[in-house]
Amino acid sequence: MVEFSEQRLGSLVSILRRRGIILPAFEIHGGAKGFYDFGPVGGRLHRRVIQHWVSHWLKNGNIVELSCPTVTPFQVLEASGHVGEFSDSMTTCNSCEEASRADLILEDFHPNPDALSMEELQDLLERSQPACPSCGQSDWSSVELQNLMFNTAIGSGKSAKAGFLRPETAQGMFTSFPSIYRHFRERLPFGALQVGKGYRNEIAPRQGMIRLREFNMAELEYFIDPEAPLSEEIDGWSEPVNLIADGKGEESLTFSAALKQGMIRHTTVADFMSKTMTFLVEVGIDANLIRFRQHEADEMAHYARDCWDAEVYGSYGWVECVGIAHRGCYDLEAHENATGQRLRAWRGFSEPRIEQVDGWTIDGAVAGPVFRGDAGSIKIALEKLPADVSFPLEVAIDERMVKVSQEHVKRVQRTESIAGEWYIPHVIEPAFGIDRIIWHILDHAFNDTGKDGEEYSMLRFKAAVAPVDYCVLPLFEKDGMGELALKIHQRLCAEANVVSILDGSGSIGRRYARADEIGVPICITVDHQSVEDGTVTLRQRDDGSQTRINISDLTS
RNA sequence: GCGGAUAUGGUGAAGUGGUUAUCAUCUGAGGUUUCCAACCUCAUGUCGUGGGUUCAACUCCCGCUAUCCGCACCA
Image (cartoon, rainbow, N blue to C red; front, side, top):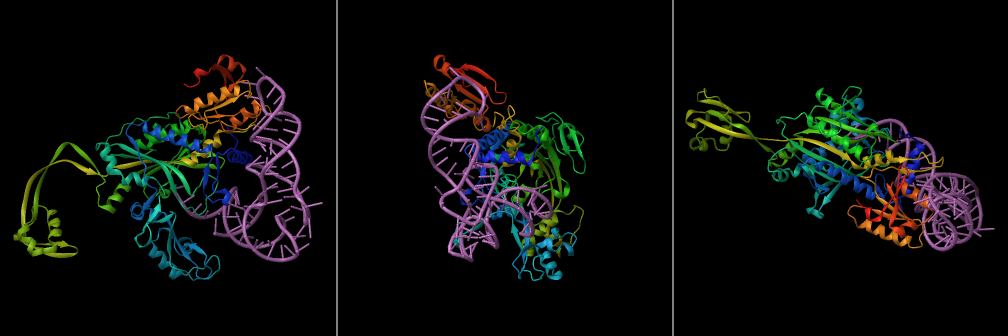
């Protein structure tokens, strides 16, 4: 097991900078908090992890990949609840100009100011006149929302519309629901995933890559019929995993056992937790340093019904890297309410339901001219009445009573056959913080335990995500060895999805060390014999073992 | 946001109110070398940023920016 320490973190960070894996962005201009570059080696690592993530979920067979804009109009994020929920209420001291959070300075005057509306906060602020924590005066500006989203203007001048940089990729998947529904020929379940940048204007970015202002997210929205029968089957990780259920301690259980006990509340959630576990291990996270923690009811995001975080242990302690949330019908319903568009799926009944309609409705020709604008509401009210009422009758419309007499109505008696119904699908969302995962891949791959008593650093990447696949090393750059190495290098680079580097400077040991430092799994060494018989030495990063093979057998 | 600490070649460090800022390592060139950071020669490359004090500031003071730690915030 790795010993995480300050020293280890320090030498890891210095290797990441020196070798161009992860570095602070815009450094020549002084840098900017919460922004990082993936450098010449890190960029490739980032790509590999994302590729692996996408194909991991596409394996499911009913999932498509989307790419939606990062700039998002105001209304979209207002409908989703982000404008309201993703912000803090701020007020500024008119005396010293210090901004404070309104709910925090009102804590002494209300048991839970966080739950108050803007108006209530404003009212309470005026009545209680709390002292400014900075200067002691009580002269506050009006309460304003400060949003954690980056805002921007779409267009310019008077025609500009308000917008935000998206705080999550998910909303694009919801607003695209009709198109995805059509693509899958209206049959659930199906999913859409997206990998891309998200933005949050964090008050205090911290801990290197752990909290960023611009970050890579990978999200899957999986749409299900909440009434469809669920299989008990769970794919993927079958070993016990550490689970922390809401209000309970840590337990080691398999996902299917946790589901059977009701600890995990939904089969699909359990299935995705299991697939998440498999993914994390495949990209190189240590299985023993992963745990799943269920959100308590009061920390659940505004949209969630059940939520589990996959947390990974590393140099910064336990860090949430994945959230798997049962969002219910929250999002589609919210966008439906805001737009009036139907974001639903059709559920056919196994047999059409025969319904006897026996009641009343208006006689349009008579009631229309009499009730004018109220006719519509009266019709709705009448159709709710049982068959055994008698007229004249007082009907409540918008808190008024309207007298309806026999001549305004007619009896409705018919048999309806209903083939199915529209419903709002539920959504299970696994959301991955790619940067946090990459950080922990690096943290867990880093090995500085030394070699032969000397200091020696190595990144033991899994082959699936290693930024460089091969390092070609001519033992010397003479007698044709340099030329042969160049030829091999070029041939490898021509292969799809293969990255090779060529290194001819320094002693062979130094070059193996350089390759180990950026985690190249295999070094190919060209020596005198290579020039004569066309064989080369393959040297494995993790154990230093060597085998000689034919150049023609190099790529598999 | 508050409190504390820090900022010197790519990386890690030393140091000074006064000539050309030191060391290790890395990197590059040449030499040497038949497989795990060997050696020799040469070379490139640094005082975060803006202002002030001073004859003179990398050094002292102030602001800013960034980094780290704690608190708060955030998921």
